[in-house]
Length: 135
Image (cartoon, rainbow, N blue to C red; front, side, top):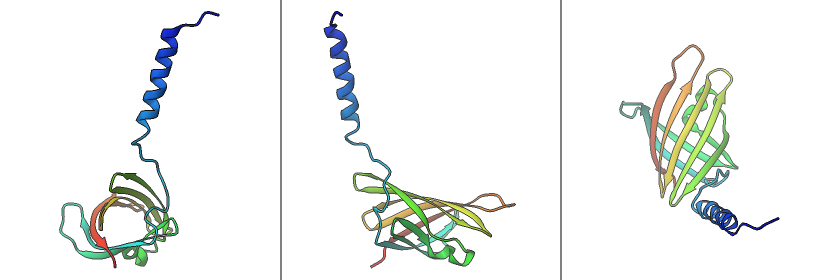
């Protein structure tokens, strides 16, 4: 079998490129925000704030206190870290009231999120939330 130096060189370049490309990548993680709570206000998409909420991250789980009266429990959450920004996602579920898909970011002491409530027989309801770290 004859060795091909050009083929080996190409293989080496590809391997190095793949390794270098992975250096800045963020991977999904759980528990990154554990122990933090954020107090804020929320409203329907395109509207002013109409209520208060507290987002709680504990034990790898996420909870919205404003959703408690609708019997939404806590749910696992995942995060992706990109520099000083932490993106999170969670999906809370209520046996009676459907599910809520949460997507947000934490940067420093601030949180911003969008969430969509899916309930049977109703169109999805999109809302926003902005808040700060609760001390």
